[in-house]
Image (cartoon, rainbow over all chains, first blue to last red; front, side, top):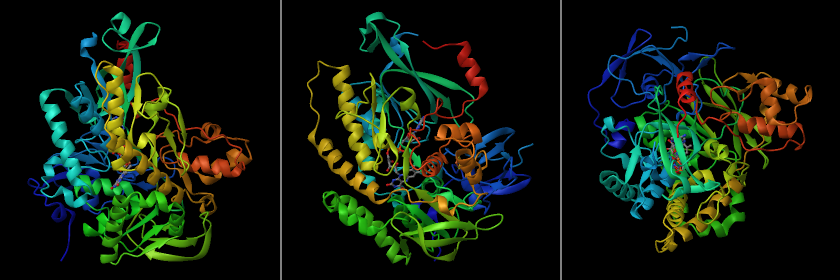
Length: 97
Length: 493
Ligand SMILES: Cc1cc2nc3c(=O)[nH]c(=O)nc-3n(C[C@H](O)[C@H](O)[C@H](O)COP(=O)(O)OP(=O)(O)OC[C@H]3O[C@@H](n4cnc5c(N)ncnc54)[C@H](O)[C@@H]3O)c2cc1C
Ligand code: FES
C-alpha cells in the first residue's frame, strides 16, 4: 500500500490544474505552494546562482532563505515556497526572462 | 491620523504565543490587531494545510490538536465580534514609534518621550507579491515572531535536494507534499524526530535519522525531564513511530557531506565525539533528499531594532530578556514564544497568555489583577525542560569538515576560504568585519542561514576573542524600492 500525505490528511482538494513551467505543463493542486508543486513533479532546482552558476531550489521552505526565487507571470524574485499558483500561471525559472 | 484608529495591542506573529496572547487580551476587553505572514493562525507548530486543499484530517500531522482547536474557537469568536482583527498574509518589515496625535496620552498610549504618549506603527507588506505596504497602529506591542531553523555549512549543503528539516515539515503540513522519496533527516534537536515521524507517515522512506548529540547527556537533566511527563510522552510517540517503521536513529553521528552533481544522491555520515569532532569512519547512505537542521534561532529583528535587550541561551542562540510579565524592558513592548527562548509550542502558549495579562494590567490599571496560576506553573516547568534540551543539543563543531570551496554564505556564495582569509590574513576579529570584507550575510537572507556559522568560525579562528553580538537587521524582510520611496514621501503619524 502506498501512503501519500493527502491520504494521511484526508484531503479532498478541488480539481487539479496545470501551470506552465518554462513551457512545460506541470500538475498543481489548488492551495499548494509552487515549491510543493515543483517537488511533487520531481523538480528540485529552478534557479542558477550568479557567481558559480550552480543549481538551487527551495531550502528553508518558510520564506527566510530566498534560495527558491522564481518568476511568475513576469513578476520576478517571488519565493516559490510562499507563492500559490493559479490555473494558467506562467512560471519561468530563468532569471533573464 | 487620529488615535481612534489605534488598537490597544498589536501582536506580530500568529503562532501559539501570538494567538494565545491575542485571544487572552481580547477576553479581557482589549482591541487587538493580530498580524501574520501566513494564511492561518498556528505558526510553525500548528501549521495548517492550505484551505483550498480541503483536509478533513489535518490533525494527523499534529500533536496537541485539541488544545489548538479550543484556542481557535475562542479566537474566531473575537474575530467575529470585531475585538480582534486578524491580518493574514501581512509581513511586518518595520515597527516604528510615533508620538500620539493627542498630547498627554489620555487614551492610554505610553508616555515614553516627555509627556507625549507614543504609538507603535507596524508596516506590513501585503501578500507574496509584497508590492503594497499598510500601516497598523497600536498602543502596546507584542512580538511573537517565532524562530527560523539554524543551519551549519558542510560540503554539498547547497545541492538541490538538501532542505531544512523544519522546511520539509512546513511544506508537508501546508501543501501535503514530501520533498523526496528517500529522505535522510539530520542535525540536532527534538524537531528531527518529529519531522522524521511525519515523513514516514506521509509515505517517504527515511533511511536514517542522524543526531549529533549524545543521548546519555539527558541523564544530567533528569529532574527537569521528569517534571514534564507530557513532553516525554510526545517524544516517545515520535520515537515509537520511527521504531514501527524501522527507521534507525544514529546518535552521536553527523552528516559530513552531501554527495551528488545536479542534486543530492547520497550523504556521508560519521561518528563524532562529545564536541562534534569526527572520530569514526565515514559511511555512505543513499538518498534523494537530506532534511537538516541544528536547532532554532529566534527571529529578533523587530525587537532588536526597538532596543529590546537580548542574552545568550544554553545552546548559543540569542533570546530576548523579559520579566515575569514577558515585558522586554522597553516601554510598551512585550515578547513571548521562541523570541524569549526556544522551548516549543506549549511554552509559547503559556508565555502568550502571561504577556497578555501583563499588557492588560498596564493598559487597564483599574481592572482587578487575576493572572491565572496555571500558565505561571507551566512556564516554569517548560522553561526548565527547554534549557535541559538546549544543553543536550548544542551546536557541534563543524569547521574541520569544511573544504576551502564550501560555500558558507549561500546567497553571496562566499566560500570557507574567504571567511578564513578575512580573519587570518586581513585581521577581521568579529563577524561584522568579516561581513564587510567578504559580503557573507549581505545577501537576500540577511545572514539568517550563515550567521551562526560565521560567528562560530570567527570565534574558533580568533580563539574566542571575537565579541558575540545578536544578529540585528534594520528591515525584517526585503522591501521593494517602490514601497520604501512611498514611505519616505509620506511619513506616517
Ligand atoms: C520551520 C519550522 C518548523 C517547525 N516545526 C515544528 C514541528 O513540527 N513540531 C514542533 O514541536 N515544533 C516545530 N517548530 C518549533 C516551533 O517554533 C514552536 O514549536 C512553536 O511554533 C513556537 O511558537 P511561537 O508562537 O513562538 O512561534 P511560531 O509558531 O514560529 O510563530 C511565529 C509566527 O510569526 C510570524 N512572523 C514572524 N515574523 C513575522 C513578521 N515580520 N511579520 C508577520 N509575521 C511574522 C510567522 O509567520 C509565524 O506564524 C518548528 C520551527 C520552525 C522554524
Ligand atoms: S525556500 Fe527559503 S525562501 Fe523559499
